[in-house]
Image (cartoon, rainbow, N blue to C red; front, side, top):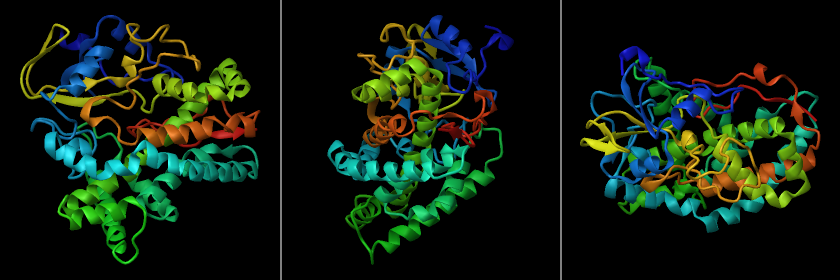
Length: 400
């Protein structure tokens, strides 16, 4: 294929959330494609479901935070000690085990009443606002931020501080753009976590920072690893869920029949959340998880040289007809929905149970509380946060 004929990322979604026609057309032509990345580098984009699972579970591929010397990760958080995709093998398993207890299904179930109470209070705060009101300010941001703050053991009142740093850390770098601001933000966020962790010596509690401090004292992790784990979870623990709430609401606004199904049958909420995750995941246009093969590999008959860039296009895999019937139809009653939005293999999302809980709480009750909830502006007027890896909107003005 000639240089100028290569498909180029990003492939922006339509109306902010609908799958890119270019992506769908490319996916229909095969499970893996040679593409050009925003940095100018060439590489491969895996869009097939089975092929994505194969890459994500094969130890021949290094994770996103361990690129070859020729490449730089697209976020400064990648490669930092403690950030889980900066580690692999036994080292990754050791660090993951330390934080896994905070996210078990049983521990998340214990949080359910607290999450429901937070959401109920936020609904009342939203209801008391003059219309139109910014749903991002009053619900989609504070809910995940309050929950992750509680779980980690930091004050939600610090959110204006850590949210700004988090956004800077999660800004796409494209390997050729400025990185100094993101590096400084990441170091400032780590310093914040370092101080809060040391405070736990005098004021321990049932939270992740106390658990991590104990892990350091027991020799299970270094202080720098523990700080990286907590800072990374603080960032990842709210950024993705904020965007997912916003994209899910926009999906429901755009599919009124599905919305009415959910209002009429609240028991559909579990399936509705999975369908939102499948079809409208966080992101924008360069969606996926990067991997780097240590050796030459062949995927679906395509030869890929060692140390190439291989982007596993998780959103694209949700439209693979080998695994999803009528994949371009948004169906909140979909029975079989084995999507890969939370990734797959040893690096699958550690917080998936918590994210699902928050989404179920929101979508299980928001339309009962606000039956006429709707956008206050045309969808095209919303400002997508294109440079933030997880996407989402600058504001989400609504009426009810």
